[in-house]
Image 1 (spheres, helix red, strand yellow):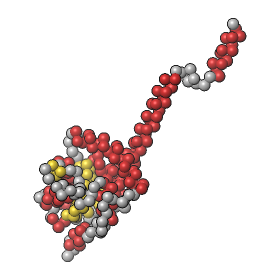
Image 2: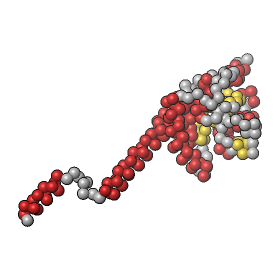
Image 3: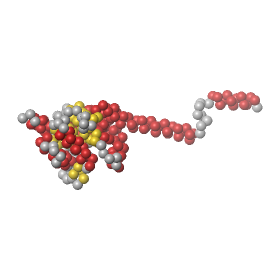
Image 4: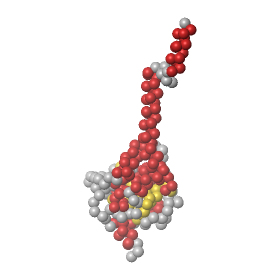
Length: 239
């Protein structure tokens, strides 16, 4: 019996750690490890947008002077800006009145006749003190990357203050920087309602697409020819 016990003890010592664990326990542990690794990978793009934009975030009070402010579309209700978009436009009007920006580039979706974000944004701004001749419309800003690329390639914007919600502004700054626009971001405050929480969650997934856009630099859905709207508006200030 003593010999049998000695041989058994020797075999147990030679077993790998965890070899006595049931297969289901090992499988669960492996699954947890894979889930954790997946979460880390999924969050890497968000970490990139935070790192890229962090030093470039400002408020309307301390935003640097720039010739152009870029306001991204955020939806319409009955042809008028949603409250979220109105808050962005309010910030742009405030920067204009303070003399920190000279021209406002409004970029949004006009892919169908009955839906025109840029014109609705223009109407709102003129109603809040921004002269019509200081507003330039980009009708093909179908997503953030498209808006950033078109700002540089179509409208000739090399430096800008970007205006959006806090949950979106980091991605906007990171993408415009990747597109060649020296950018600072103003993130406007909003009530933390269901839309705000949805936007924050959506950003986790949108950051993945943003990282791919920054790496592969795809052409916008519609690039089109160069437009002189921004340069003409700026030139008119010196006439």
